[in-house]
Length: 443
Ligand SMILES: NC(=O)c1ccc[n+]([C@@H]2O[C@H](COP(=O)([O-])OP(=O)(O)OC[C@H]3O[C@@H](n4cnc5c(N)ncnc54)[C@H](O)[C@@H]3O)[C@@H](O)[C@H]2O)c1
Image 1 (spheres, helix red, strand yellow):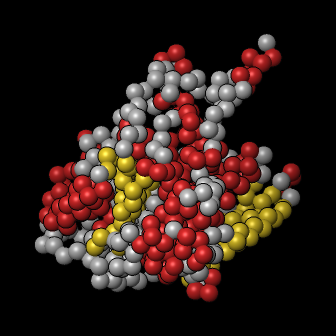
Image 2: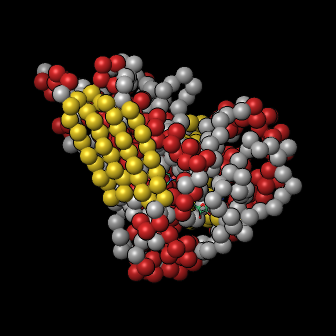
Image 3: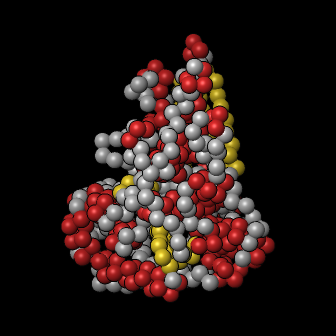
């Protein structure tokens, strides 16, 4: 993607004609908060706060030019009225019932979009308790092996597309966090992966079956959970081969969002860190799933890596080589989706004098996640129309563990991520990239 300004040319981006199908794996708190939100925004009863595609602006050219359009007026994005939703879940609740049970939004608001929500009934899921120990449901597909289950998903998608007269689609994993897995032999090549599907290999969790089905149909895929899923050579190769943009992993919300806002600031001012203790209490179904140590391990890995990459202890050994980083998540049912995340930072400054920062973020997880789902759906669709394929590093802004090319380290600093995202949009439109040098103003 990197290009010298002199080499820049406008990408040919197809117009977002017709309907965009948003395929959601999992119809829980995040998915229903996203769908109900979009429907409420369409009716003019709520605003898309937190969404870059809906409210964000982008500066073009020099500061003196005063060209600062909204992002949605700058790049051709699908309009909210063009979105059509489909979902899979292991429970049969339609999206109205699921939204009420999730308890994120007030019943009053949900009732105002009830007819739209009731129309979305989850298709039966590819699921096995082996990968999410705390859940069991009845709306689950049966098949001879994982290959056959993938074919059933492909059929679901084709049926949805035809029934709703949909032009393009994107798929976003908003289902539960699966147990921790490491890449293994079955994940190394497309051939090995397909053999493993047919052999019903335990190395293939349901999330990979969905991702495989999506990519085979040319549908962009984003992974909102920390599961391994598409972060394996086989599926990245498949995405490149089928020219499909993909992104992941794990929506950046709550505590990690705060971390990637605070840590770059500490590093910018060369303030040292002795320790960062983060603890969370939450009581939604996600919290219940994460109460299982194997699912928690997947989440923990995703949350821990952030500071190492932002603070770069190898470059600043005196400041960051010894900090103690601990992350805890405790399932505490009374709190529901209204999580509380406490952070205690032990920092040090001039002459080594110690200081402390305490952050108590009373956040709402799904309220922070819903605009991310919307932006990912619209930007991945844009990427597909701009003929971008494979890992979309410019979407790192939205993820706790951004996928990255081989040999690169992930970029976690939210401000660098935002600059990368906006420069990618400028690049696509043939606008000058902004370096913030600004010397020309003083010539
Ligand atoms: N809310 C946030 O801020 C946030 C941030 C980062 C990541 N996430 C991740 O997003 C995911 C969704 O979060 P949530 O709060 O909506 O959780 P949730 O438990 O409310 O919803 C997940 C839904 O997925 C369903 N499900 C599980 N396995 C499935 C499968 N194989 N196929 C289809 N459906 C399946 C469950 O039945 C459940 O209804 C979780 O993995 C969570 O870790 C959430």
